[in-house]
Length: 190
Image (cartoon, helix red, strand yellow):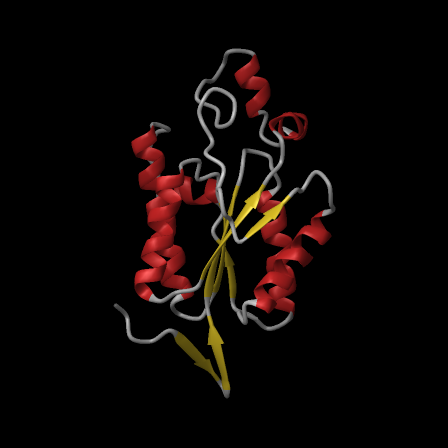
């Protein structure tokens, strides 16, 4: 277990944390994460966004979309997030992370290291996500071009007890980020 949990910047003690945003493809996870990151940086917080697509390209290249590969991808992201958070960074992690056991393993790693971890479920119905379809995945799945799309023909195990549930289809990005900011403040992480 690493000894230091706080970083000292000047005269200010800074507590890092991992803020894990999970949900279906096109649920709004990344959009909310970047909105919150902008606010946190404006307030002087060291903040990084570990975008699932970027991580898959650079850290998890070569992994497929089997359950095992998805678990490995989530564990790699969780390791990097915990490392950043344990060094005073607010690590915002917008990833699908479809399986409860994978997310629980990340939570346990954080608990073992004494690193704050906040799980946020961006709970957007698949019907709304398919209309948003930012990357065209739902259209490709409907056309038979891809299979294994989380929430359609591959399972998404919704968190049963997330720290926060955001229904992004019922509030703006700014309202969603504000709700998360309020939770972090309430928990003493800001």
